[in-house]
Image (spheres, rainbow, N blue to C red):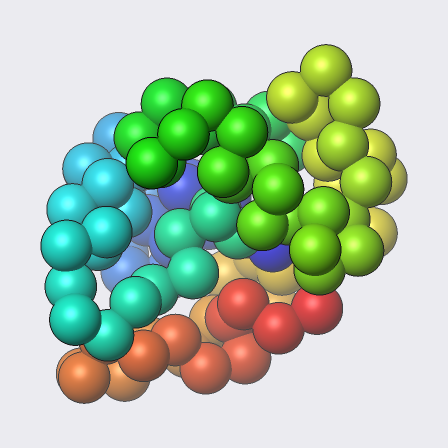
Length: 102
């Protein structure tokens, strides 16, 4: 789990978290899927859920991975959070390594 801001900070553009959100939204159209459901806002809210194929798709995907959610917010978000200081690695072929693992 990470946030739009953590990805933006890692990329050297800390104030560009909205752009990261746009990229996560566009990622749904890639042949090699990016686990965009694991990117939430800084408070652990499922703020991008409306960009998935259904109103509950993001929450359903997280619950399948054992993440607990209440009222569109990840319970114990800090426990699951991987920020830019925790080893986000982005490779050039759109695969994210270490970044999305729990």
